[in-house]
Image (cartoon, rainbow, N blue to C red; front, side, top):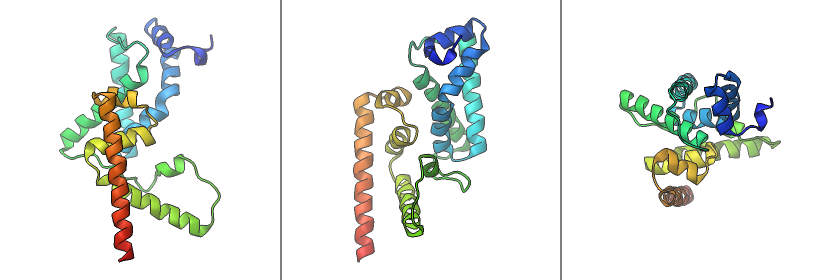
Length: 194
């Protein structure tokens, strides 16, 4: 039986029927997107791994209890669970999530690197550092949509499901985020010229 060809729903049914391979394939299929979306919110590998594991413990418990009913929406459902666990963590810590990278992990390296001169590399690294700093200044709702869209590669429908807003609201937040980033970059260029 080739699990890679099965739909999410078929894999869920296989797992509920007692075949662990169904869940193993679902985790393999989505672990990168789910882990990345958690990591980008918490910026700590160990914490992201803990929350990732807690997310799948919750998924397993929900599936085993027969309470899963999100036909065809497995990824947004799991992402929402992970997102809620991140929010719970920060509520306990009484601080807001930030979008910065630890020294040992750089999302821009994961997104792909290419051959470049030393000067190009320095300019690129500074640009990414500046962009990360500017992203920190965005309102939390805009920052969240930007992270989910560009770093976790989620669709606006998935983002709307996870954040429990309409697609239009998610699109609006993204538009505001990009406009705000553009304005901040223009202001930064103006201040460098003066």
